[in-house]
Length: 82
Image (cartoon, rainbow, N blue to C red; front, side, top):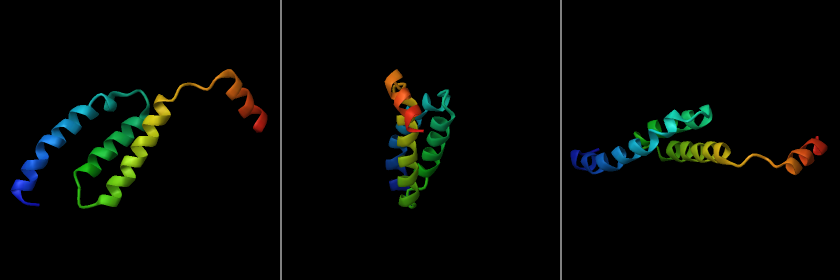
């Protein structure tokens, strides 16, 4: 990677790191791990498949962490299905 390309990426990476900081303090360990792995993958832009995989894992972890709790009816239906 050229110095010019690296310089062009410095600002976006700084913004990504600032946005990730609160997520690294999340009480959900899956979100913390997914954030760390996504940050590491973002540092290796030549590995696009890895970055996409970590981004998908990050999305799943944050969705699970922010999903509203199941309602009483949903829990009851789940118990009946088992």
